[in-house]
Length: 88
Image 1 (cartoon, rainbow, N blue to C red):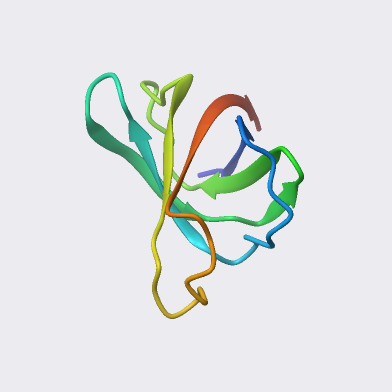
Image 2 (image 1 turned 90 degrees about the horizontal axis):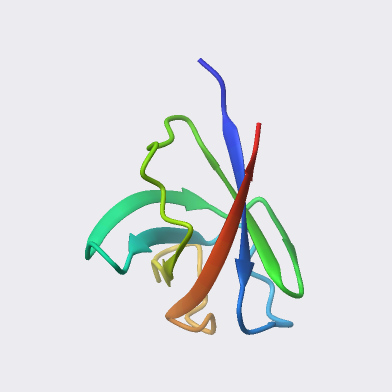
């Protein structure tokens, strides 16, 4: 079983550090949760989240919702819109 790293290109750049923060991947067209994971890498316009399982229906466009829990100080915006690319 492999791990897939998915790079989400966010539509609004950020200078906030989101590495280590858990995010939900929301398919906005269907209105359902497509996945959840912790950011392992970021740049000004992208975040990378690894998945153990990846849905073949992972949306190309959607929304990322920060899960503001113990690993976040609450300063991360609650959601980001994205377009994504996938690498193995």
